[in-house]
Image 1 (cartoon, rainbow, N blue to C red):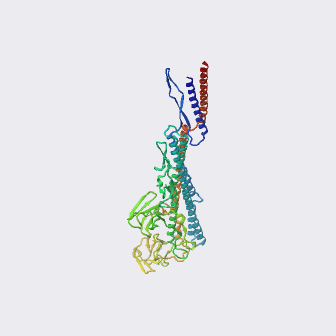
Image 2: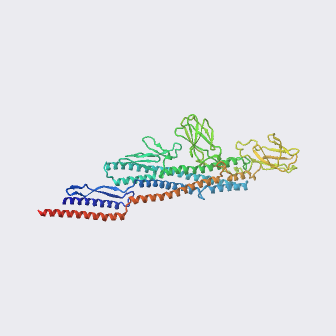
Image 3: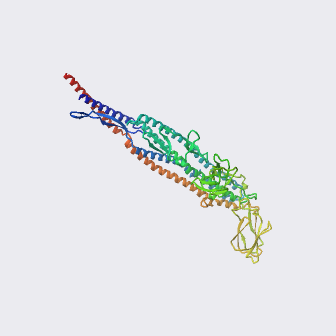
Length: 636
């Protein structure tokens, strides 16, 4: 019996020692990230049958188990990947918001200064100083457009760098998880005991991976983790880790996407399937905030240039010559696919119809299809080109297209970068109108004629007869009139019924007639010679500031820019509010996880005392057993 008592004491001693070791492990790792509190599982040993009944044989240490909840761990991972997503998105979008909304470096002040200078020219059309000031502010406006675009390009480059770094970190983590899968399988074998510290390391790596991208864990029967990302793309399978890579976009090589790196060329993954974490945030920020913002600034630049040029061409400069382009407006950018040899042409047909989207044009061997990338709406197929889509005319270029050919069309992406001034001579500003109207001094009646306005559609090539002298002669009685092109000796109209306030249009211009004419009274429209003080076209140029020429005639330059700034601000605000809410959820899930798995030093201190006393008691039991054995020996 003394032997049994000693054996029981020894098992109790071992159990207390296991408790002390485990408690010491918990205390030493109280501040270790990812550590889960451990506890010792004890069970009574199989009792021994004797004539007096069953007698216990002590205690056995069954296992050292983690205090771990897979449910709480998964909830924390989900919260972590969402918080990382919104933190990264907020960092990126705030850079755009700070740029476009800045009262000093934004676009609004430069546009206001530009149109103020145009108004100064309208006030003093013949003054060289006002004209030179307009060219100077125009150069400043062009520079502001370029600076904004350069900042957007810098952000785009930064996204590419961040994508590369994030993919490299994800690959490192995936390799470590795969290696731990092998180590855990080897150590654990088929037994019940688990390598707790290795399991903690692997779970911590999964948490770190979720900071980069949303990762789903599929637990295998051997204890290994299979990891998928996005919408189910495999990243870790057992002891094998697949390698992610950054891949040039098939449509735009300047744009990096995510793919798998196998033995050959990388295989791209649809960027829309990569969600969560900083990786998902970078991809979504680029497609939903950076691309539309850069395109919006480019669209304003293109619209301003095209509309200002159109009105400038309707005017006359100080040299008496029809106005030319004021701005050099870039055409849409077309990038051919990697295997495409045929070219595609693109031009702006209607700035009011321009969107903020890029387009993919594809050829299937029989026709062309045009996909608007912002919403994937497809136009076509078209058997032939040219075709006009959203204000952009697409035309066949050189070479013969083959099935599978594609082109990326970016109507406004580089509009701000490539906008420029067409001249530096202030005399070339077309402030005057090319025609004027006069009433003959010998007229007996009070007939009047307004200053003629050149039709806005009268773009180059201009109407050849625009500056011809046109004579309006009232008949007897003066309720009708005839119109003659005196320069071309051509009758344009006869016996036109006269109504005060009526509008007439000939040779590309329009004007209004009023008053009370007498028979034989004449009104003349003729070339505007010596019109240095004429400001009619400058007034029309200045009025473009308030002309709704964008969004189908719903937005001016300023309202379009303000809408863009407001959209960026709304996204930034939404990201901030959502991020703050998710940060609170993450703290709550971590608190719940720590309440189960975290080390409580007060509790561990109490355990130390408990296991110390148990150890002392077991030692006393062994001592008693020894004395009993000695007593038996003394009987002999």
